[in-house]
Structure formats: structure tokens, C-alpha cells
Amino acid sequence: MTPPTGPSTRGLQLLAIPAVVFLISFQGYYTQYLFNTSSFGTGPLTTLQTITFNILLLCVWYTYYKSCTVCPGRYPPLPPSTSPSPSTTSSRLPPPPNQRYCRKCTLPKPPRAHHCRHCGRCIPKMDHHCPWTGNCVSLQTFPYFLRFLTYANLALGTEAYLISLRARVLWSERHLPSYLGPSLGSLISLAVLGLLCGGTMLALGILWGTTVKGWVCNQTMIEGWEAERHEVLVERCRRSSGGERVEEVEFPYDIGFFENMSQAMGTRNVFKWLWPFAGGPTVGEDGKGTGWEWEENGFNPRKGMWPPLDPEKARRAAAGVGWPGRGVEREGWGQEWESPEEAKRAFEERQREDWERRKERGNRWKSGIVAELEEEDELYDVEYEGVESDYEEGMDGEPGWTNSDGDRLRDYGVDEDLEDEDIISIDADDDIPLGELLRRRKVVGTDGG
Image (cartoon, rainbow, N blue to C red; front, side, top):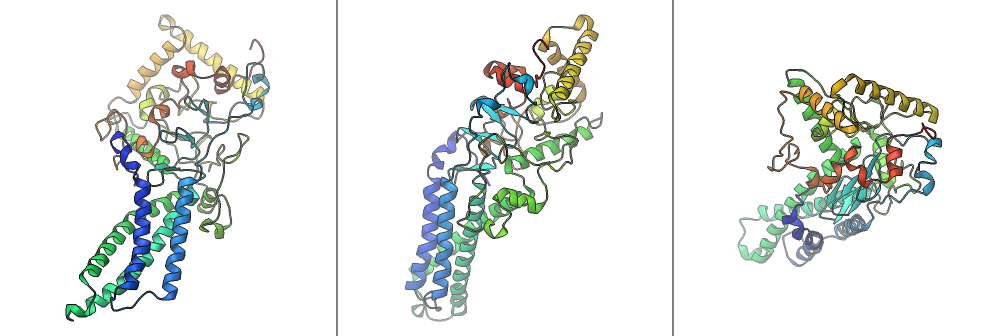
């Protein structure tokens, strides 16, 4: 339900919010004016109908205003004490699993966060960038967006009911002379309102359904896109001659429908979930808690395995070697240690294994990363040989994967260039602070270690 956001549509997005305001005003107030001034055989609106309809309209206005104006979330810079340096790294635990880094924000990118190319920053638990609100649907704005859709559909349902009452009377009196019924202008207005109400109900009803599904399953639109991409890759690898070669990853954030819904709304009080004046969750200020850490269901063998690797990055991930990243077979990474000593021993063990692997290459050995990347390329060619794929070119003819609806990450507002850099690799090291690199690689050894 998110329209493309390429350059050709950016100008139209400037008219999106005025169009929504006009639509609410026209259907909300012209409907009442028409029903109270024209005779459709049912008389004007009753007091109860007027009060009910206008209360719903007030809820629509308020929740839409909040959806447009509430900050989608901002990750504050971490205090210096939480930013490791060469002199303090030895006394600190490794970073949380699946830690990423945004080069544009120059800040760590927690799980479920994405850099929005419209908002210009990383958004916590980004669902998508909605052009109709000019805002991101995210951790902080999701409750208001859901309430807006709920009250908009209730108001449209009420309007449809009022229109149907008058349409039914007109149909029952269709054999009467025309001068005994409403004017031609009133009939045209009623027909326009009926068509507009039906079309809007269809669009918002579908959007409300997908939003509620994501709410109950604790899955954003972006994560649904990632899940479909992963399923396609796994299925195609299974159909290949060599069998399955990609570790299947389960969606880890579905922790039960009640916990999912409570987490999204920021409260376990069900009476506040759809209360129009209730608030929502906010990002933690100290680098922990809401927006920084997410409970997982434990279906995967280790934490921090979501999102699954992009097929475009499979050359680095298939072999499970090279610089520490989020590979599917990287032993030790993406795990948690109870003490710095355990992390140090794990790091030294990986160093030893890397050195032995390099010695076995003999005359093929080259310095550093070049050799490892060559090994990954060779293993990738073997792993994915014969697997049909359309990852190199999407349905729109441009590089990149598209889902069954033809959507790419950029259609949800995500900066795809930065998503390609999420995986920890040496290619982007020049633009990342030294302290962040040390934290990424979990260097917890002492001086000279």
C-alpha cells in the first residue's frame, strides 16, 4: 500500500497531506450538509447520528494530526562511557549481537532500525515511510497510525450506513414522479459521496488489515519484505542440484500475540491501545531498553540472526569467513559472553583458526583481506552454482530484489545504499571511527594481545 517514492513522484507527495485533509473535510462535513438540507425521504440526521459522526471525525482529525507530527524516533548519541576506545576496550563486554553502524548518521544502528532517505536519519523499528502522513511509521508513531486507520474506517463505515439508508429509500420510491424526490444536484452529490466513500473504505480497509496483521505478528512491512526475500532464496537453493546451502532463519520477534501487541502500543493496558489520546513507546536515552534491544523467541540457534543475509551479499556470507559480520555459519559471532575473559578466549581462538587456514593455502596465500575475499568468491560459486535467481535485476529492470508485489526497500523509504553497507566489512572501514571498529570486532584483549 506504499506507492513508489522515486524522483517522478516526489512532487506529488507534497500534495498528499492536503489531499487527505480535503478528503476528510469533504466526506465529513459535506455529507452532513447534504443530508440536513436535501430531502431523501429519511429527513435530516438525528441528534444521535450527528453526535456519533462528529465524535468519530474529531478522533480522525486528532489521530491524523499525531500521525503527522509525532517524531518517529531518533537515536541519541551514546555517552562517552559507552563508546569504547583502545584504552578502555579491554574492560568492556562485546557489543550486542547484530550490531550495525550507519555511516550517514555516524551512530550505531540497532536491530530493526533503518535509515530513511526521506527523514534523513535512522528510524527505530521502521515500518515504512508513509507519504500520506509525511512521516515514518515506526516504533513511536505506529500507535497513532493504527488509531488513525481504525477511526477513519469507523467514520467511513458510519458514513456508508447513512448513505445506504437514503439510497434504500430512493430505490423503494423509484416509481414516483421525479418532482416529488430530491433534486438532480442532490442525487449527483449522493452518488459522488457513495463512490468516494466506497473507494476510500476499500483502500483504508486493506491498509488497516495489513497494519493489524503486522501488529499481531510484530512484523513491520520491511521485515515482511525481508522474510519473503529469505524464503525465496531458501526455496531456490533447495531446488538446486546441490540441495540446501543456506541456513533457514526464523523471524525472531514474534513473541506471542498479546506480547506483540503490548510491545507495539507501549502498554499492557488494552483499554489504552485504541484510546485516541493515549501515547506510545519512546526510544531509550541510555543506549538500552526500548528501541535498542528486542526480545527474541529463541527459535533460532543464536541471537542476532535477523535480518537474513541479502542474496547480493551472499559472496561474503556463504563461506562464513573473513571479517566478522552476520554470516549464517560464523561460529562465535552473534553470541553473548558472560565475561570479558570468555570473549577474549573466543577471539584468540578465531585468530588461531584464521592463521592455520592461511598457512594451508601455501603459495596461494596473500596478505590480509584479499585472499579471504577470493576464497569467499570461490566458495560462493560452488555453493550457488545452478541456482536460478533474479536478484541481479528486479522486476522494475533495475538492480536489486523485488518481492511478489514489485516492491523494493526504497519503496518503503529505506536508503538502500546504506542497507548494503550494514554488513560489517573492510570496504567501509575508512569512514568508520576507530573506536567503532574495535567494538565491532570485539577486541577485548589487553595491551599487546
